[in-house]
Length: 283
Image (cartoon, rainbow, N blue to C red; front, side):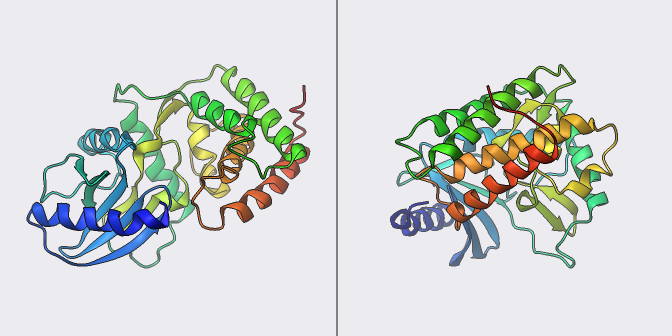
């Protein structure tokens, strides 16, 4: 979130929570990127705040309720307030259960895989209209093609990213394997180790596609504990995922801390992965 928006976003969360009967004497910023994640005290509630145009919050709240009802390992909404999106001062605010970190905080690959398998099993029971994973790939490709939005991206790197996104989008999309509802970005930053077990957060990226697309976001060791993985497809999805997140780091509006440094680092990893896997994305 833009620095000038943070105080207003915090104030919107504080005033909304207070209007709902939650006591807020202090606010701790836990994460700041495209949205704010706040811990409100002493009521000990997690608030997520985004500009009002970020209407995917409504989708996330509704999906979280349905997934929880299906027994999926997802973070719960705050039970003390109505489960909906609140609008205030140009922001949308949602309230979630705060989970205190447990020791060890790092989730083992086996537990990670088991939780992701449970999440996928529950997701297969839901009929929810969501984008296809190739839609998200195309958004990244269009970003790379737009020089106004990615002015700092060198020509050679722009060509590499564009070719990789276009080619692997086609290759993965044409495999014709089983597809289902996915988390979309189940990377370690969206996984919590809690007293209630492993839980997934940040459901706004849900899409449809092969489970290998989700596994591509997890550490490599996780796939070793997930049954029935198509290894060739997983390797392709890993490179595709890396190209997507690299493209977003070059968006002039990207707000991820150290995003440009990561984007440069990941460009090197993409080149190495293409060579290592013998993937030719040119033409």
